[in-house]
Image (cartoon, rainbow, N blue to C red; front, side, top):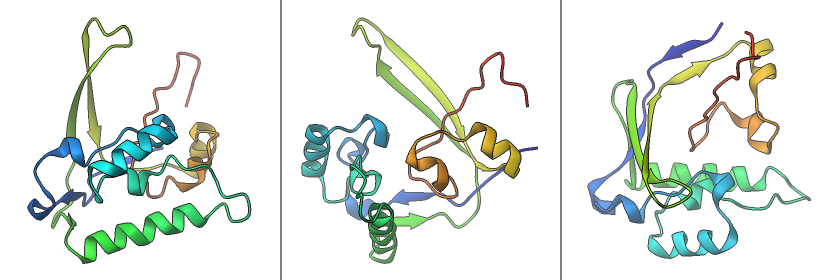
Length: 151
């Protein structure tokens, strides 16, 4: 059984700037090399610096995750990010152009901390390298079970 509970999120502080377009990035699996360079050029605090889109280091596959964790801690310590005082649920509405470019779509999400039993986690975790790191992730984890997915 899954438990869905509030968590203490982190936000950019006003000292970083108010234009979120300079600070936000797509999910890691949507970031190619060219886009990554463009986003990095927008701000030294763009989330792409945490999110990556990096190719794994074959010698040390955990290196990128350690680097992102160290940068995240640095941003908290230097006031780039601030952790909320109280646990909360977070509502998100994302409006974007559809793939054809002829219309807009909206995605609505509710963010919370999900605790999943080990057996269920093994059944629903993605096959990507991020599957083992769902205990903390900068990107939301979107999973909609299909009609044949029974708990």
